[in-house]
Image (cartoon, rainbow, N blue to C red; front, side, top):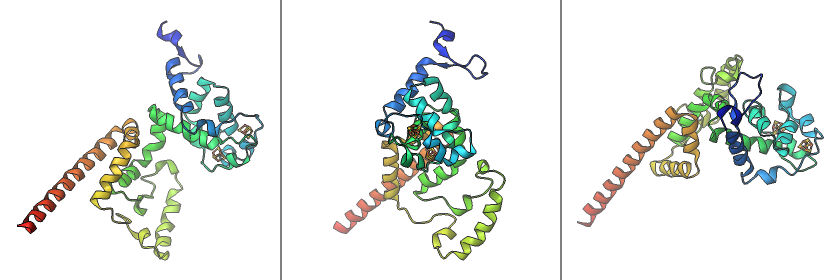
Length: 249
Ligand code: SF4
Ligand code: SF4
């Protein structure tokens, strides 16, 4: 079978056709997610989820459509929805509370997003790009988003009106008596040992693998920081041993 006959795609689309194997691999990952059978029990196609979905009011997006694509195993449609539509969901789970079948379209969207990341889809890279500074901050310090990161420069996808929110935020933060809101560097102290334990969790849970797929440069920066911290911790342990040895003498 040649490449053209092995691939599936809309003949009118200018996007490259996606190989059948890739469509099947993406769906296999979605279907094998531990929560998949819990989130999808069937579908009446009644549209209650879409009628109550806030994102459906503002975007070309419908949770009913997402559930139908999965329920009917429409591999091309699923792949297509992962290029843009799944990123419109606000993860509010109103749909899950209303579905007479007990489905969770929002939960299914989350599973599809994970698959989009795993398969290095361009849509996932685009959506996550503005969060690279947040990721760097969280992973390198074990700390939260700092207030000085909430500005138009770091979140271009928030649109031109972010500056209107950003300006009064500075005033509001001064008025709110919460010390962590005024901190620009770190909100709390994370010691070296805790940092390294967090790295192990991110390594073992596959977070760092996902990060490497999404943003290789950021992954390299974080790996360097991680190695440096591990060296620092080894040095600290050696110092402790030396001190203990001196005390025994
Ligand atoms: S997911 Fe539930 S609410 Fe939405 S169309 Fe299907 S059965 Fe109806
Ligand atoms: S979780 Fe997503 S799909 Fe469900 S109602 Fe909220 S925005 Fe809509």
